[in-house]
Length: 336
Image (cartoon, rainbow, N blue to C red; front, side, top):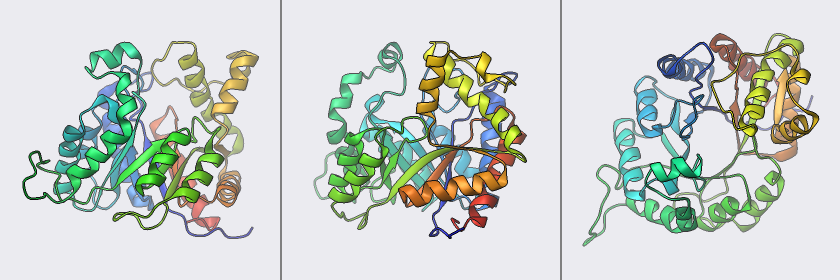
C-alpha cells in the first residue's frame, strides 16, 4: 500500500451519556478518554456544544475543556465547537482566554453558526437563531478580543487579550468554507454527519484562502467516524449504536446512547436506512486491516491536513480499544 503523507489524527468527543450510565460517568469517561488518546499520540481532543440532548454531556463546553486540559499534559484541548449565536463574543473570549492562560499553547476554539439545539432551547438560552445572520461579524469581534489591547480600547477580554487561542471555523456547508477562506482561518468540516458538500467546500476553501497574520497557509480538517474492533463483524455490531442514534434523532426521540444490537435491519425502515447511510457516509468500520485501508483511502482521496475521528460506541472500554486500533492502523498505513 502506498504511504500517505504524515497527517495528524485527533479526536472529537461528545461526552456520551450511555444507557445504563449517567452524566457523572460520562464526564469521568471523557477525562479518561483524553488521557488515553494523549498516550496514544493523538494531536487534539475536542468537545462540542449541544443543548437539551440527553445523550451528550458537553453543553458547558468551556467548563469541560478546562477540566480536561487540567487533567492532561500535552494534548491540545478545544471546542469543535462553540455555537457562537448562543453567546456573546466577549464571553467566549473570556471563557477560552482563561484555560489558555492556565495551559499556554494547548487550547483551541472552533466556532460554528448553528444553534446546536432546537428553537425552544435557543430561546431558553436567551439568544436567538437569527443571531446566526451576524456570525461573520461575531467572528471578527471575537478575533479582536484575542488581539493585543490597543490604546483607547473600551472593551477588552480579561483573560483573553493577547493570548494564543487559534480560532477555527466549523461548517457543514459552503458558508463556513467561504468565511474561513476570507478571514484566513483554519477550517473544520463536519463530514462525520453531513458529508454532502465536503468536496466542494474543500475546493472553495483552498481556492479562495487569503493568508492572515495567524494562518499563512490553508489548514483543513475533516471528520470521519471510525469504529474499530478486533474483527470486522464486531466493529459492524458496535457501529449499530451510531446508526440507532441517528434513527432516534430523526424520529424525534433523542435519548441516551443506545447499546449495540444484532439486527439493525429490523430497527429501521428502508427510508431511514438510506438517510442514515448518506449522513454517515464518511465512516470507517472494521478490524485493524480494514480500518488501515479505509483511513488511508479517505486521506488519499480528500487530502485533508488533519483528520478528527469520532467513535460513537456504547461501551467505554470498547471505545478506548477503537481509538487504540485506529491509531495503530493509521501509523501502520503511513498516515501518522
